[in-house]
Image (cartoon, rainbow, N blue to C red; front, side, top):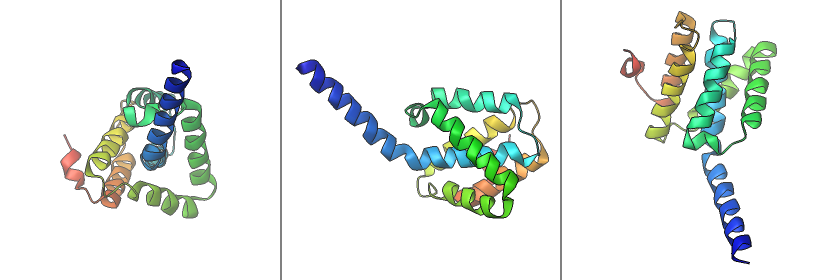
Length: 145
């Protein structure tokens, strides 16, 4: 009986954690799609870097990697097929975490990591990260090295 209760407690804790981190998850997938698509090509190395980030970050690893891939693919499809509607919708998802400074900074660092995954920091990716910083109320210069 104790094992069942412990399992139930762990499951409940995971569900609460997923619910609490859902806005960050959605913001991360929106920002990632915006950044990787900024230069017009989505590379395998960028996708691989995103998978690595999802598997390593506590805020993201509680989500199924397939769920993340599906959301990322949906976001990329929306950008390709309906850019005028998709861009503001995705930026709105990003802006939802602006009140959490720690999460906002982490999100920008994720974007930077993804943008250089293909060994190229394209000017369009840099500009897109600047837009993301603006949506989060952050100074892009803070992230330049």
